[in-house]
Image 1 (tube, rainbow, N blue to C red):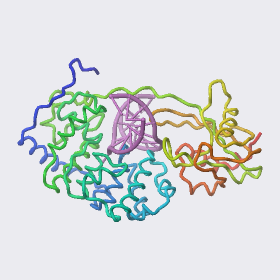
Image 2: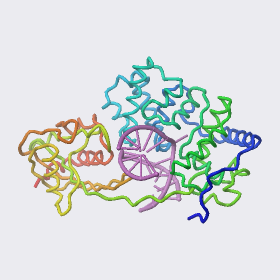
Image 3: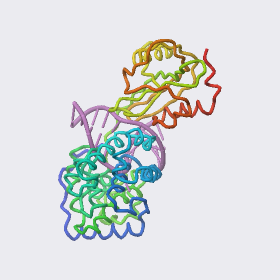
Length: 383
DNA sequence: AACCCGGGGAC
DNA sequence: GTCCCAGGGTT
């Protein structure tokens, strides 16, 4: 739905009276309707920090179990800092956006080394930590340090876009520049009220002012909402359309060391980039006019420097990432000759199926492991 | 400003 | 299928 008029760059200022009313009604609504979530029961900076990182681009229900398991495994900042990265990524396995885990780990080490193991209380120190931007720092300051700071996440952007009928695309940086002062203007000065307010703002977006079918009938801001007044709640926020995502065919080797098929070669992906620091079955993209078995043999030669025999196709796995889709074509393979070298990875390792559970794998690779474990006959299908 | 970075839930 | 989610980092 394209707007015939240019996006509104300026907003009608909110009077002190309206701001006061918005604060009161939202906090009252939250007290009656807010969910009880684990990270709302604590004000420990470490626990709040962890929750905010896990919740980046990730829905509440997905996070809850990871949050509990992570805190049980790493109960303090120093215990996290002292742990090997592999252990941290194993706890994060399946949650996605693994740079969050790597940055969390780095930040814990910075806190251990530069802040005596105590989470910093100065906002500038918090936002300087890797993985913590303006909004996450604002949330931690508000929720754990009793220092009211504005926040601006996906929920807040949607709520504000409707409240003020902002029709600028919600993804654009210029829109955030309009919204940050608004989030700050609405935030109460009192630390306890600010805690309630920022929690409530996100709760409203998550449970009431939802992307589709917002439930305006039970919204505490209905009387003030400019989108509702103009019946635009279904049109706002405006979103720019996403480009169609490309698709890749990936040849993947389940590469056994010998005919006993006890040990299989796995590779540690580079530290940065997609799935950085996770283990995987080696392989790579098929080139134009290349057969899949030829692709597997070529990739293994290029990335590991060994010759293999490519056997039967074990399975096909389709997986969707945000910006592309892949089909993993998984082949049963046997080592032939050469010395394995980690040319395109950080390390290589021969492991048994049972040992694999100690390593962190991406979701699509874990589906291969599940298949191998559930169907041992598949290990014996080499042509 | 544009691009990169996972996986899952809601529709 | 589509879209987005308690975003941040890099270039």
